[in-house]
Image (cartoon, rainbow, N blue to C red; front, top):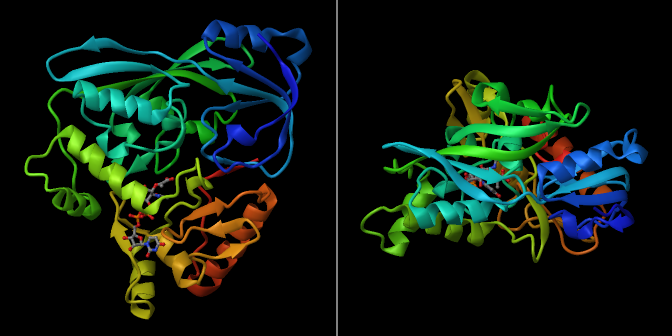
Length: 338
Ligand code: EPU
């Protein structure tokens, strides 16, 4: 295994921010990871685990050992009449897993097609889109505890999933390296096309009979039409979470802003479209230097080329303060700031 020094992280984060890592190593197996964690010279070095780098904004150089997870492999570990239990290496690109499932007709992740990032980040973030969250198909995961180097299994309840939340963003933050995730997928699909845009796109596609692949394709088409591809424009998907408000607060806002977009969630709160709030404050399509707000989806901040993480962070601060001033709502970032 090779520990590199002072290397640029530009190609390791989808925002394309050019910061340096003091030390950098990749690993493609649990054993290799454990070996790195045991290296005497790095015992006291802080560590940053990188997957696809699709949910992080670097605002400074990383004075730590950056560990890039490249554990691969997809295998069926168990199946019965209803379910397939699929274990995937944390370093696999999420969309590769979706393609595998679509190809094998395993249902449950088709609405989550084309989400950037790796398998390992899927439970950390409880990734979600178009009416589905990964917690619905999550079965368990394996992780290595960074200090003890022991393997630990997390069940669904251990993960404490919430909206773009899990225990790995809170109590267990930076304590574990997720090495594999096991999903429980359906052999007989239960289609979820409740999200209006999907039904519309299926109609445009002329789909008569629903299938796992047609839903995945509809999602791919929708995402391609409004979300920038990180390969050409740096971004990390939604930069902010959609705020969840008590119904009473939403009703008051609705009187003043009748077009405000919100949906009741399962907690009896109203999830408000942050993209709408940001657009109303005039940010959609805004650009200052190379930092900007995407012109087709205001929730997505972008790096047009050489923006620094601080420039993007400053833009997010400005957005937060104008949204607070206009609507009295405090936006929370979804992206991790380093
Ligand atoms: N809207 C606007 N202006 C905008 C953007 C959105 O008015 O610039 C309004 C529109 O009314 C639109 C509604 O907001 O109908 C919802 O927009 P969209 O369907 O694009 O979804 P979103 O709520 O903005 C969330 C997720 C996305 C996910 C989509 C689809 C969060 C933070 N974001 O965005 O997830 O793809 O729903 O399910 O929950 C991500 O997490 O990185 C991500 C891209």
